[in-house]
Amino acid sequence: MSALIAAATPTTTWYLVLAAILFGIGTVGVLVRRNPLVMFMCIELMLNAVNLTFVALAKRLGDIGGQTTVFFVMVVAAAEVVVGLGIIVSIMRKRPGANVDDISALKG
Amino acid sequence: MELVVFVLAAAMILVGGLGVVLRSHPVHAALSLILTLFGVAVMFVSQQAHFLAAVQVIVYAGAIVVLFLFVIMLLGVDRTEDIKTEPFKVQRPLAVIVGLGVVGLVTAAVVTSRDVVATRGAGIIEPAMTDPDSNIRQLSRSVFGDYVVAFEVTSVLLVVAVVGTVLLTRKMKPTSKESQ
Image (cartoon, rainbow over all chains, first blue to last red):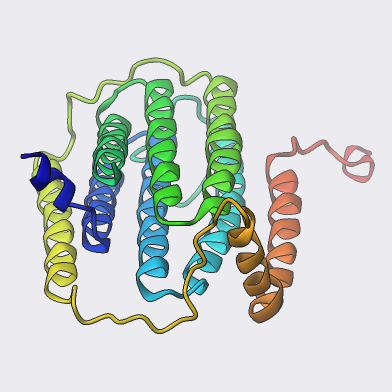
């Protein structure tokens, strides 16, 4: 049993499958939830899944470019969160407690 | 050892991810998100991305989630929402089918092509006791060497995002010309 555990070292495939599952959870969250903040958090889950994929493949391919890409993804994610939360704040000020069904009309 | 780390971090990631989707209280969802982000940071360490693990904890868990919590408190949406009722009956089963389809297809692609990819880069240097900062040095050579243009454009993006958000959330005061 202990030899079996010692033999089972996580390969890149394990990491990629885990990232796929995390991406799926994020997808379902975006599709199911109605609160715009929670939908945003689910988008963060999907971004993290992709980051995990990049890092795992950077190790597998021996290419530091994957880690560099994750660096840029993090910066863009930070900017995206700032802008998105700004939009949510300015919408919520006009209509407190709105969910995404209430603001589907594309007009104020 | 590596297996234990993987299993524990994977459990953190999956429990946190499910928590984000299933908890009805937004603050609980944000705290579950922190659990996921820490799990991903552990994965980064075990995949020789030490600098990115630090950035993950500082930027994601430290800044982005705190921003989420700030906005939750600012808007006063920190109350449990009713996630039992669903206006469109078909949406949840469809969403689960789509999610399982994404997971299944990506997993199938990963498993079938697991032997295809081959090492093609110079290799990720594993930090040793004698050379603890090799990952930072290698990453910075890449960022400030091959990708320096992208790095500079990123700074423009950040400035645009900050200015845009300030403009967006500013309370519009009537200007002196309009009020006259």
